[in-house]
Image (cartoon, rainbow, N blue to C red; front, side):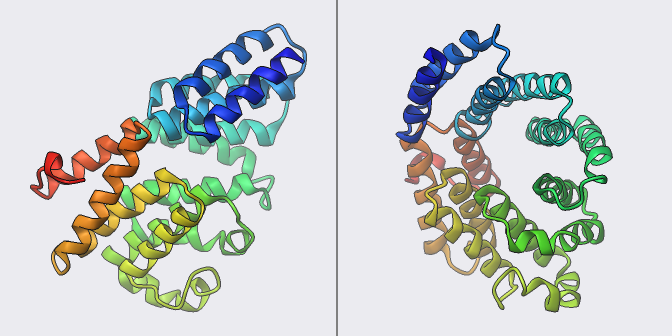
Length: 275
């Protein structure tokens, strides 16, 4: 009961953007649950902390550590879909750490499980992440194939982060291999708006982030939009950068701030004079 109360405090701190408080309470909850036989409660506490480090604090080494704890717990519990869930997140953490070899390995291990569960929501997450990896490697046909394979699942998807990632992946394909978008337009308009241009897809991603007050998604979409519009609409690009910086600074989002600084450096902009 005490662990539940501490976890509730952690969640409340998280919801009010007190990430340091959330971290402190989640860590305390994990310590309290170490000797517990309640695997579901332990799983929830471990995932909450890993998610906090990855998406809100931006410490991917720590997120990897706790995702791995979750995976080990799922192995102990003999829960295959939960094993796959944590393998996907281990791959994501390695992807952010630019360890693409390890990310591919975790994806492959997850796929061994997911191929037996084609309707699982984990299947959708796996395919979107795999598409992102293929785009990074400029294998656009393979990336499109992964996204097309989950159109039916995407219709029912309510997860903010994966919806944004799906749209951004399509936008990157549109930007660099638009013929693939045109070839598959009749299928894609089942899950996105009629306008499949790069800018429109990124605007749709940004709108989802704004509607759900999901800072990581807003910043991610804004940065892609900046690169897309800066040549023809400098004022809009600066507004997007300014918004991203203010959001990231307001919550001490180190990961997002690092991404913004990287974009500024790439575009020869002075990060200190924006925002």
